Image (cartoon, rainbow, N blue to C red; front, side, top):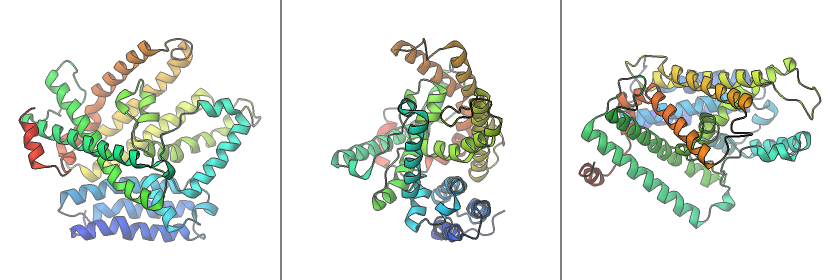
Length: 389
């Protein structure tokens, strides 16, 4: 399907410079609708890594990974009014591609937040979970040292897991994990750590430089996902927040707006609420959309792997999240009872078991394809870790 195998510099320049530049000029053209700009941009950015691959695997995988984020960000741009996104400057465009936010978007969200506090009351605003965003004024020497130490720690953990797999190999053929099989359990725990560290390192190097150059806020990719006490906590608050926000804008919120005319709750502006069924439909649609985009990633990265495995994983977790909310609403668990450190530990155990049992559906393809072993490591450190694993 490739048109040509290109030089690594060309492979980087086309999807990271040329294609976004074309889309930016389309976005600035006020005569084009959001739908036209989004479709043309998604096709342009989505097909580029397929049509113009390169033989340098690190570059090829990086470009294909970046294209996934670019496509969803281009679709996300279409959720904003044309009167707004058509006036973005190049810096605004670049910041949004990297972080899912920019100065005009933050100003708009601030206005909406103030309006929501008036319509729904301060109590509702205070209960809303807020990500740990680091603004430019808060980035002092302590923060930079912390970021540097964090990167070193993630790199060391990545190198340790690489040493483990080069020593023992990886069993990744099953679709569901048998947690009583110690070898299989260790393999998947190690690969989950490798995936987490590789993802974190790539995100920091891919976004932090631009964020610092623009003086923009920095949104961490993760918020200690290994401490999640429920699947909803994991997916909504702790895992890949920028992409969660993107899917929320592209799918969750628009679907709720579509269902507004069918909302049987009070129609007054201050008390209008969506029903549990409407929220469940929007939640499931978001997971389904995530499943489709991860299938797109699978097509880009994995050769010879069966399709729809990623979809099973995300659809399953969407259903489990909906069931969790429904059970909590009916039983009162986590609301009127089941609150406290002991219950949080039980919730953490149940969450980790669920993630481990189902993770082969998602991580198995990455493990078999060796996509995650492209991060540069020190041969000396790798050799040292091999002596202790």
